[in-house]
Image (cartoon, rainbow, N blue to C red):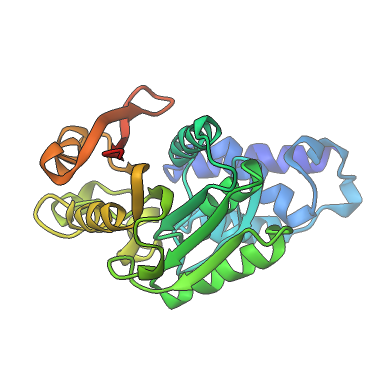
Length: 286
Protein backbone atom coordinates (compact mmCIF):
# COMPACT_ATOMS: atom_id res chain seq x y z
CA UNK A 1 0.00 0.00 0.00
CA UNK A 2 3.03 2.25 0.23
CA UNK A 3 3.86 2.37 -3.48
CA UNK A 4 0.98 4.59 -4.55
CA UNK A 5 1.56 7.06 -1.72
CA UNK A 6 5.23 7.29 -2.65
CA UNK A 7 4.32 7.91 -6.29
CA UNK A 8 1.84 10.60 -5.24
CA UNK A 9 4.63 12.34 -3.32
CA UNK A 10 6.84 12.30 -6.43
CA UNK A 11 3.99 13.56 -8.58
CA UNK A 12 3.32 16.36 -6.11
CA UNK A 13 6.90 17.59 -6.51
CA UNK A 14 6.64 17.48 -10.29
CA UNK A 15 3.36 19.38 -10.34
CA UNK A 16 4.71 21.96 -7.91
CA UNK A 17 7.69 22.53 -10.20
CA UNK A 18 5.25 22.94 -13.10
CA UNK A 19 3.43 25.70 -11.21
CA UNK A 20 0.23 23.88 -10.22
CA UNK A 21 -1.67 25.87 -7.61
CA UNK A 22 -2.60 22.78 -5.56
CA UNK A 23 -0.07 20.09 -6.49
CA UNK A 24 -0.82 17.63 -3.67
CA UNK A 25 -4.58 17.78 -4.17
CA UNK A 26 -4.13 17.42 -7.95
CA UNK A 27 -1.84 14.40 -7.56
CA UNK A 28 -4.27 12.72 -5.17
CA UNK A 29 -7.29 13.41 -7.39
CA UNK A 30 -5.46 12.00 -10.43
CA UNK A 31 -4.49 8.89 -8.46
CA UNK A 32 -8.05 8.44 -7.20
CA UNK A 33 -9.48 8.74 -10.70
CA UNK A 34 -7.03 6.24 -12.18
CA UNK A 35 -7.55 3.67 -9.43
CA UNK A 36 -11.30 4.10 -9.09
CA UNK A 37 -11.29 5.09 -5.42
CA UNK A 38 -11.98 8.17 -3.32
CA UNK A 39 -9.07 10.34 -2.22
CA UNK A 40 -9.65 9.18 1.35
CA UNK A 41 -9.15 5.56 0.19
CA UNK A 42 -5.80 5.98 -1.57
CA UNK A 43 -3.94 4.36 1.31
CA UNK A 44 -5.99 1.20 0.72
CA UNK A 45 -4.71 0.59 -2.82
CA UNK A 46 -2.34 -2.42 -2.69
CA UNK A 47 1.07 -2.16 -4.32
CA UNK A 48 0.13 -4.81 -6.88
CA UNK A 49 -2.82 -2.73 -8.06
CA UNK A 50 -0.75 0.35 -8.95
CA UNK A 51 -1.77 1.62 -12.39
CA UNK A 52 1.01 3.20 -14.44
CA UNK A 53 -1.55 5.35 -16.26
CA UNK A 54 -1.20 7.60 -13.23
CA UNK A 55 1.98 9.01 -14.72
CA UNK A 56 0.24 9.69 -18.03
CA UNK A 57 -2.33 11.72 -16.14
CA UNK A 58 0.40 13.56 -14.23
CA UNK A 59 2.18 14.45 -17.48
CA UNK A 60 -1.04 15.90 -18.90
CA UNK A 61 -1.59 18.01 -15.79
CA UNK A 62 2.06 19.05 -15.87
CA UNK A 63 1.51 20.31 -19.41
CA UNK A 64 -1.35 22.54 -18.23
CA UNK A 65 -4.43 20.46 -19.04
CA UNK A 66 -7.17 21.11 -16.48
CA UNK A 67 -7.44 18.48 -13.77
CA UNK A 68 -11.15 18.03 -14.45
CA UNK A 69 -10.60 17.38 -18.15
CA UNK A 70 -8.15 14.62 -17.30
CA UNK A 71 -10.37 12.93 -14.73
CA UNK A 72 -13.61 13.72 -16.57
CA UNK A 73 -15.31 14.87 -13.38
CA UNK A 74 -15.82 17.98 -11.28
CA UNK A 75 -17.23 18.27 -7.78
CA UNK A 76 -19.75 21.01 -6.98
CA UNK A 77 -21.56 21.14 -3.65
CA UNK A 78 -23.09 17.64 -3.35
CA UNK A 79 -22.67 16.73 -7.01
CA UNK A 80 -20.12 14.82 -9.05
CA UNK A 81 -20.47 16.19 -12.57
CA UNK A 82 -19.12 14.89 -15.85
CA UNK A 83 -17.08 17.56 -17.63
CA UNK A 84 -14.56 17.76 -20.44
CA UNK A 85 -13.38 19.92 -23.33
CA UNK A 86 -16.05 22.32 -24.50
CA UNK A 87 -17.76 23.00 -21.18
CA UNK A 88 -16.84 25.45 -18.43
CA UNK A 89 -15.50 23.74 -15.31
CA UNK A 90 -17.55 24.88 -12.30
CA UNK A 91 -15.60 26.71 -9.58
CA UNK A 92 -15.99 26.63 -5.78
CA UNK A 93 -16.79 30.34 -5.59
CA UNK A 94 -20.02 29.74 -7.49
CA UNK A 95 -21.15 27.42 -4.70
CA UNK A 96 -21.58 30.46 -2.43
CA UNK A 97 -23.98 32.07 -4.90
CA UNK A 98 -25.97 28.83 -5.08
CA UNK A 99 -26.11 28.81 -1.27
CA UNK A 100 -27.63 32.29 -1.33
CA UNK A 101 -30.13 31.18 -3.99
CA UNK A 102 -31.22 28.23 -1.87
CA UNK A 103 -31.68 30.40 1.23
CA UNK A 104 -33.72 32.85 -0.83
CA UNK A 105 -35.94 30.06 -2.15
CA UNK A 106 -36.51 28.77 1.38
CA UNK A 107 -37.58 32.24 2.51
CA UNK A 108 -40.11 32.60 -0.31
CA UNK A 109 -43.76 31.91 0.38
CA UNK A 110 -44.01 29.92 -2.86
CA UNK A 111 -45.08 26.28 -3.01
CA UNK A 112 -43.24 25.29 -6.19
CA UNK A 113 -40.76 28.06 -7.01
CA UNK A 114 -39.80 28.60 -10.63
CA UNK A 115 -36.06 29.10 -11.25
CA UNK A 116 -34.11 29.94 -14.41
CA UNK A 117 -30.36 29.30 -14.78
CA UNK A 118 -28.95 31.37 -17.65
CA UNK A 119 -25.81 29.91 -19.23
CA UNK A 120 -25.94 26.60 -17.41
CA UNK A 121 -22.75 25.00 -18.80
CA UNK A 122 -22.40 21.66 -17.05
CA UNK A 123 -25.77 22.27 -15.29
CA UNK A 124 -24.00 22.56 -11.93
CA UNK A 125 -26.20 25.40 -10.66
CA UNK A 126 -29.46 24.00 -12.00
CA UNK A 127 -28.86 20.52 -10.62
CA UNK A 128 -27.75 21.80 -7.21
CA UNK A 129 -30.92 23.85 -6.87
CA UNK A 130 -33.08 20.92 -8.01
CA UNK A 131 -31.36 18.61 -5.52
CA UNK A 132 -31.36 20.94 -2.53
CA UNK A 133 -34.67 22.71 -3.11
CA UNK A 134 -36.77 19.65 -3.95
CA UNK A 135 -39.95 21.54 -4.91
CA UNK A 136 -38.20 23.94 -7.27
CA UNK A 137 -38.80 23.69 -11.00
CA UNK A 138 -35.64 24.69 -12.86
CA UNK A 139 -35.23 25.78 -16.48
CA UNK A 140 -31.59 25.77 -17.59
CA UNK A 141 -30.53 27.64 -20.73
CA UNK A 142 -27.31 26.97 -22.67
CA UNK A 143 -26.51 28.27 -26.16
CA UNK A 144 -23.35 26.28 -26.91
CA UNK A 145 -24.11 22.85 -28.44
CA UNK A 146 -21.04 21.17 -26.96
CA UNK A 147 -21.73 22.43 -23.45
CA UNK A 148 -25.37 21.44 -23.93
CA UNK A 149 -24.28 17.83 -24.50
CA UNK A 150 -22.46 17.84 -21.16
CA UNK A 151 -25.44 19.43 -19.42
CA UNK A 152 -27.79 16.85 -20.93
CA UNK A 153 -25.65 13.97 -19.75
CA UNK A 154 -25.45 15.36 -16.22
CA UNK A 155 -29.18 16.03 -16.03
CA UNK A 156 -30.00 12.55 -17.32
CA UNK A 157 -27.76 10.95 -14.68
CA UNK A 158 -28.42 13.18 -11.67
CA UNK A 159 -31.91 14.67 -11.97
CA UNK A 160 -33.77 11.66 -10.64
CA UNK A 161 -37.02 13.55 -10.04
CA UNK A 162 -37.09 15.29 -13.41
CA UNK A 163 -37.09 18.84 -12.02
CA UNK A 164 -34.63 20.33 -14.55
CA UNK A 165 -35.60 21.23 -18.13
CA UNK A 166 -32.80 22.09 -20.53
CA UNK A 167 -33.13 24.60 -23.36
CA UNK A 168 -30.63 25.02 -26.21
CA UNK A 169 -31.05 28.73 -26.78
CA UNK A 170 -29.45 32.15 -26.41
CA UNK A 171 -30.35 33.54 -23.02
CA UNK A 172 -31.14 36.96 -24.48
CA UNK A 173 -34.29 35.57 -26.11
CA UNK A 174 -34.96 32.33 -24.25
CA UNK A 175 -38.17 31.32 -22.49
CA UNK A 176 -40.58 34.08 -23.59
CA UNK A 177 -43.41 31.82 -22.39
CA UNK A 178 -42.17 32.37 -18.82
CA UNK A 179 -42.08 36.18 -18.95
CA UNK A 180 -43.24 37.70 -15.69
CA UNK A 181 -43.64 34.37 -13.86
CA UNK A 182 -40.17 33.38 -12.61
CA UNK A 183 -39.30 33.56 -8.91
CA UNK A 184 -35.50 33.44 -9.20
CA UNK A 185 -32.98 33.96 -12.00
CA UNK A 186 -29.40 32.88 -11.34
CA UNK A 187 -26.43 33.11 -13.69
CA UNK A 188 -22.69 32.66 -13.87
CA UNK A 189 -22.16 34.37 -17.24
CA UNK A 190 -18.87 35.17 -18.97
CA UNK A 191 -17.39 38.36 -17.53
CA UNK A 192 -13.62 38.52 -18.15
CA UNK A 193 -12.48 41.51 -20.27
CA UNK A 194 -10.20 40.56 -23.15
CA UNK A 195 -7.72 43.13 -21.81
CA UNK A 196 -7.02 40.70 -18.93
CA UNK A 197 -6.13 37.77 -21.22
CA UNK A 198 -2.51 37.61 -20.10
CA UNK A 199 -3.51 37.43 -16.42
CA UNK A 200 -5.89 34.49 -16.81
CA UNK A 201 -4.29 31.15 -15.79
CA UNK A 202 -3.11 29.12 -18.75
CA UNK A 203 -5.22 26.08 -17.97
CA UNK A 204 -8.31 28.33 -17.96
CA UNK A 205 -7.75 30.45 -21.05
CA UNK A 206 -6.40 27.56 -23.16
CA UNK A 207 -9.05 25.00 -22.24
CA UNK A 208 -12.30 26.54 -20.96
CA UNK A 209 -14.58 27.55 -23.86
CA UNK A 210 -14.07 31.15 -24.93
CA UNK A 211 -17.79 31.91 -24.85
CA UNK A 212 -17.82 31.02 -21.15
CA UNK A 213 -14.91 33.32 -20.27
CA UNK A 214 -14.89 36.57 -22.22
CA UNK A 215 -17.83 38.79 -21.32
CA UNK A 216 -17.69 41.26 -24.20
CA UNK A 217 -17.25 45.02 -24.21
CA UNK A 218 -14.30 46.97 -22.90
CA UNK A 219 -15.26 46.11 -19.32
CA UNK A 220 -16.28 42.48 -19.88
CA UNK A 221 -19.82 43.17 -18.70
CA UNK A 222 -21.84 42.92 -21.93
CA UNK A 223 -23.06 39.40 -21.06
CA UNK A 224 -24.09 40.56 -17.58
CA UNK A 225 -26.06 43.39 -19.17
CA UNK A 226 -27.91 40.78 -21.23
CA UNK A 227 -28.62 38.79 -18.07
CA UNK A 228 -30.04 41.94 -16.44
CA UNK A 229 -32.43 42.56 -19.33
CA UNK A 230 -33.50 38.92 -19.52
CA UNK A 231 -34.00 38.66 -15.75
CA UNK A 232 -36.10 41.83 -15.79
CA UNK A 233 -38.26 40.25 -18.49
CA UNK A 234 -38.62 36.86 -16.82
CA UNK A 235 -39.11 37.75 -13.17
CA UNK A 236 -42.46 38.25 -11.50
CA UNK A 237 -42.95 41.32 -9.28
CA UNK A 238 -40.79 40.78 -6.20
CA UNK A 239 -38.67 38.13 -7.92
CA UNK A 240 -34.93 37.81 -7.27
CA UNK A 241 -31.77 37.62 -9.38
CA UNK A 242 -28.18 36.59 -8.59
CA UNK A 243 -25.31 37.15 -11.03
CA UNK A 244 -21.68 36.18 -10.54
CA UNK A 245 -18.82 38.53 -11.47
CA UNK A 246 -15.09 38.84 -10.85
CA UNK A 247 -13.74 40.10 -7.55
CA UNK A 248 -12.91 43.44 -9.22
CA UNK A 249 -16.27 44.12 -10.88
CA UNK A 250 -18.59 44.40 -7.90
CA UNK A 251 -19.13 48.15 -8.08
CA UNK A 252 -19.68 48.16 -11.85
CA UNK A 253 -22.16 45.27 -11.75
CA UNK A 254 -24.01 46.91 -8.87
CA UNK A 255 -24.87 49.81 -11.16
CA UNK A 256 -26.03 47.51 -13.97
CA UNK A 257 -28.99 46.72 -11.69
CA UNK A 258 -30.03 50.34 -11.17
CA UNK A 259 -33.27 51.54 -9.61
CA UNK A 260 -34.19 53.31 -12.85
CA UNK A 261 -34.48 49.85 -14.41
CA UNK A 262 -36.86 48.67 -11.73
CA UNK A 263 -34.45 46.95 -9.33
CA UNK A 264 -34.49 47.19 -5.56
CA UNK A 265 -32.34 45.87 -2.68
CA UNK A 266 -29.25 45.62 -4.89
CA UNK A 267 -26.38 44.12 -2.92
CA UNK A 268 -22.87 42.96 -3.62
CA UNK A 269 -22.14 39.71 -1.82
CA UNK A 270 -18.85 38.06 -0.95
CA UNK A 271 -17.36 34.62 -1.41
CA UNK A 272 -15.48 32.50 1.10
CA UNK A 273 -12.32 34.58 0.60
CA UNK A 274 -14.29 37.73 1.54
CA UNK A 275 -14.11 39.14 -1.99
CA UNK A 276 -17.00 40.61 -3.94
CA UNK A 277 -18.33 37.73 -6.04
CA UNK A 278 -21.99 38.18 -7.02
CA UNK A 279 -24.72 40.79 -7.09
CA UNK A 280 -28.28 40.15 -5.99
CA UNK A 281 -31.39 42.24 -6.54
CA UNK A 282 -35.15 41.97 -6.68
CA UNK A 283 -37.81 43.45 -8.89
CA UNK A 284 -40.35 45.90 -7.52
CA UNK A 285 -43.20 44.08 -5.81
CA UNK A 286 -46.83 44.84 -6.61
